[in-house]
Image 1 (tube, helix red, strand yellow):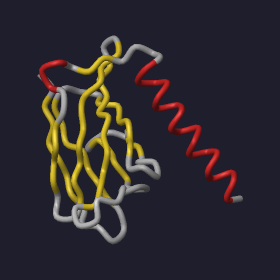
Image 2: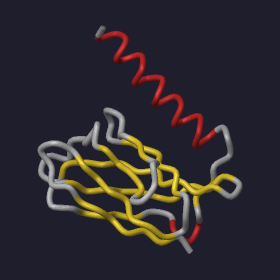
Image 3: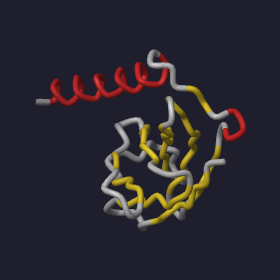
Image 4: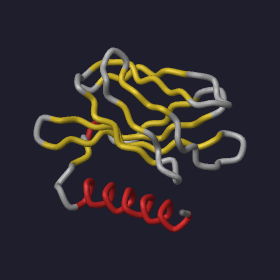
Length: 119
């Protein structure tokens, strides 16, 4: 079972790499890299765009240890859209509109939210 987990995570990493490199996603130049801090986590992120769709590509880490935060529920408030970071804390989240709120929730962590605005 451990091998299956490693293989699934490897597939996720390959998928994310393929998604961001091979399919032609482009970073929005004016809004390249951002950092958001909660009480226990730091989120570094950027926006990616493909055709008319915008995504948030990010990494979650613990502030005290710098360890990746994985398996945190990340969702767009008011929508049934969400994702979960992989073992490296990396995630890709579809953003259905240019302005909104992203909710973060995981056991052992305080829930927090982040407002976003894409210009």
